Length: 110
Image 1: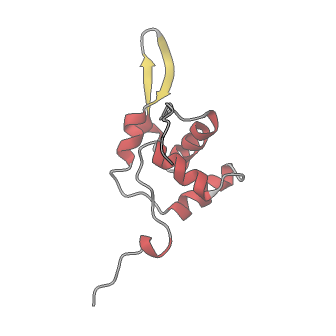
Image 2 (image 1 turned 45 degrees about the horizontal axis):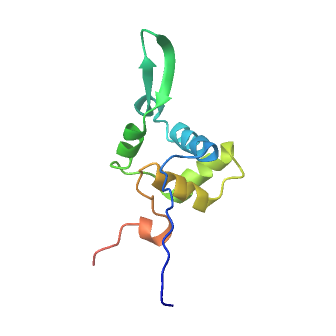
């Protein structure tokens, strides 16, 4: 190979409709709606709320349940969601990836 051609690619952090639906479902099952939604404009549009992505990202600062637990709760409402899709959505939303399996358990000290 003697030459490399670079092509521009647009990087987006916007969630697709499916990803946003999954995120809203996660917020619901974690019971943190009151912290993740904010009023758009109380005077012009009373009662209308929007998803606050900064508040969603702040959820990652607190300890989240394991990915397996979140998946189990989400699957009751959205049975078609796969664990990897769920992990990707959580990462895109700014949440730390919840751990699952052996890494989620605290290590014993002897």
